[in-house]
Image (cartoon, rainbow, N blue to C red; front, side, top):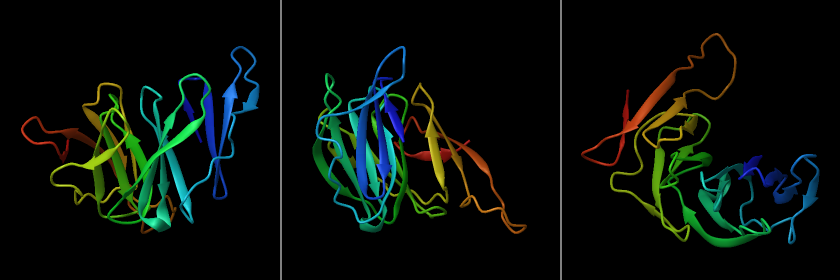
Length: 180
């Protein structure tokens, strides 16, 4: 589930995407026109939005892709922008704090992170060097766009698990990820 601009809530229910407008003050939810929205993936895994609330990113895990929707800034209705291939099971996605880049993890404990530049229309373009060989399960951004926080592992709680929190930054000389 994600909230865009404190006005709209989007939630995956099975293989459908439902959208609601949020009434300020009361928090009441009202279905957005066109909801539920069709998805092309057989298993949708997670949702993310850019910091400005202009785009919604849906990880279609079994299809190894990310679906991008533009968010109507008046009604919250979604319009498809496109479907973009990932290098593997598209599990978790986050944008940098500025909404310029989308980071997609490969599986719950995958070995790669795909990185895409986000155009002003929502089109995704893989950046040079992507995917990056980083074993990370979950990534989250912070507002400046300089850092990402990642957690390894699949969330299982067994004696042999080792969960590590990592801080990443984008290099000034090349667009990529490095462990801090």
